[in-house]
Length: 391
Image 1 (cartoon, rainbow, N blue to C red):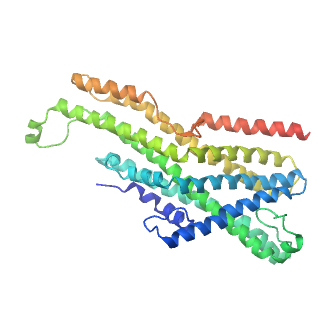
Image 2: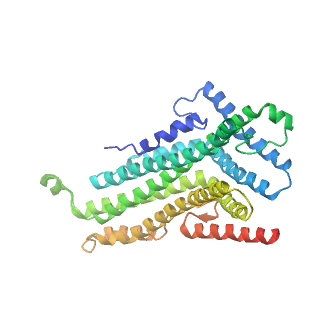
Image 3: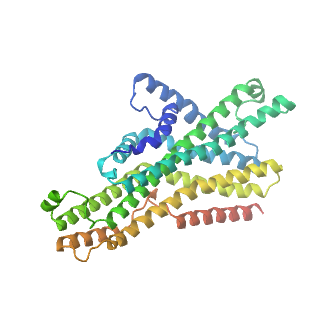
């Protein structure tokens, strides 16, 4: 029975289609025009305006850092959009692999593992969506409420667009505010639906490794078949067939990891680099005067950036650990009375499993907790360097 493992990504696909990066099964000329107009308006033009704005900023370090935090986030969003535009065929291949026969469990225990993985992916998306939407609404709506409620000056939610004249900004204050608010909301949705999709793929890989662990422990168990069938099936040959299937399954999981890495390697490099820079500038901003409400925003924003790299690193470590343990799982079966061919195949699997699976970002670092620690150390080192230069 197929479980349709990509069902947990349906909500992602709906948002991808709305965000103009996923035509789905309805790729037509009208959607192509919509995609080009949407991405040009809310990604490329948005990013260009933001970049130009830096040249016109006042020469104040606190103002520069405030703009820099959102700019780094925009760089990460841009990399994700480009990934989906240029890697669409490979992303389709990833979804096809998840639905392939090799990745479908054939027993109750395996189906339970897949069901738990799908449930986790759905819950995780809802949790991240709640936090992201709440934070975004607070950031974009609070200045508007203060403006209409208390008559305070309306401050743009992202940057000042200082390259426009003051009279122009005053005349078009509401259209500019609306454009920036809608743009930052769309960028939040890009981050939400790409990051949770990538984490969902990591969870799916872990689920496949857990299924392999169960199958390896039962590789010498007898199947519950009729006596007539049992008479025609040699038990040793059956065990060889089972371990061969496990070898092929593990090989397919390894190829799947390579495919995921190929698609998201550049994005991971940009995202982790930008997150490290954001943590650094947030620490720097903490040393400068600001209202208490802004310090609260800085703290929550920095925590989100830390989680953005911590969670993938944690699950990357789990993939490596799970694949490492498979070399020991095979010894939990009744292998000693096995045939010579079975033991030979068993050694082949152990040798293969001794090279653990991993996901690499930018061909430079593996997703792992040590990598997370190294990134945090680098961010703090840059912060201390900037602090010394400031002093």
